[in-house]
Amino acid sequence: MKKSKTYDIVTIAIVAALYVILTMTPGLSAISYGPIQFRVSEMLNFTAFFNKKYIIAVTIGCMISNFLSFTWVDVIVGGLSTLVFLSLGVLLFDRFKEDYFWNGQLNKAFFFFAIFFSISMFTIALELKFVAETPFLLTWGTLALGEFASLFIGAFIMDKLGKRVDLSR
Image (cartoon, rainbow, N blue to C red; front, side, top):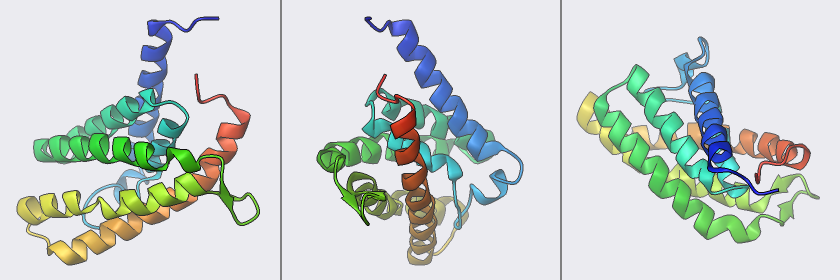
């Protein structure tokens, strides 16, 4: 059966909404912003490995989350950073999607992406240096560690979910 554009729009909206919910829910929102953060919603980055349309979904979710809680600068910087580095990450690491570490427990594409995307947090560290006057290297380090932790945990969850739910549609 052929998919419709309506289906794509709805699934993009659902993933974007899930990103916002996982970022803004009380309790989770407390750890989702600032120089030290752990965004549970970042695990949704891995949906882009199942279908590239989710690059837009995650970018929109990130931009809405940033709009609701920080500044317009974060909407632009965070949104563009997500769009660029998520797209690049999928382009670079998609070829490892069928390969695993640890006897099939950790998807190689997801692991490599987690490292890559964590390094990309320099963009947010630069933003925070100018907007909130935080020290760049320390902020980059804490952002990268938080990003890696959330993506590393999310890699296991999204890989298992992707085996049970058809995320490629």
